[in-house]
Length: 397
Image (cartoon, rainbow, N blue to C red; front, side):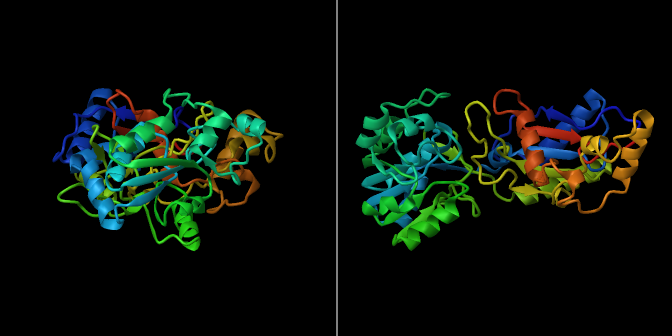
């Protein structure tokens, strides 16, 4: 072992990306400029992460509330529509709800409780215990919810999402009924037409609704899978992964992310002679320990990546080896024994005690989370992340 540094993740500043820009040129130019200014060299198997936001911006992948309304009208009859399990988020859902509500006369909005799918709370578990309410059995009306718990304010945003979503629906011209339940079939007492808005549980929710007798069931992943009068669209994820752009528009999850990743890889190979890996990333997959909010509101961490990022890590736990297999060794002898063990490790360590605790998650989920934490979502101006040494181990020179 000659190197004293392992993984390095650098946030790379780029120009502000606009519709029509060539994202592969912006990314490669920015990395080469950073390498020259900061004095690092580009190597095979380095990793480039590009946030989904700038890919979608370059594509011009935007849609308006009225575009959403048009597709809602294509799929439903414009009367009463059940809207299930939305995330409690101004950024993620407010504009979507505006468009959905414009496409119906009556919205029956059913919210999960005590929190939404990604952990945004409506009420604490302690209050549920205090009131003897079981969220998996008890369905509550808006009146019943307020009687039991009073006004609920989101701890981070300070928003009463019940009132906020009601105001969006009514301002959009629809009547509003709000329910609280974790059982999808509860909405069918009000309407047989349902739009389910959950992200990671959407397939199960759709199956439950159809089994319970719903006549028309779609999810956010079915809305804007094609363009409405020139709007943006996403054939795979629809409205999932979208973010608020203006009060009337959203930026959709990018299209053709796999192609974008492969094009960036090809340009870097042509310019530098090195084969780097590339992924387009959105939300990281991690949970806030204080607010209990799970970060992953996008449908996937990475919608597109090069083939070298397939799979999961195959690593041993150095501290396990030091405490068990080589507990009688110290110093250089311990280093040498561990290095030799790593050099000769099995190609598949699944289930092996020496690999316990090494988090065998998808590489793209791990690397995408690293990228998301490095780039942030604020004003750092680093929508590209350059990672070196990720595939190195203790024995790399």
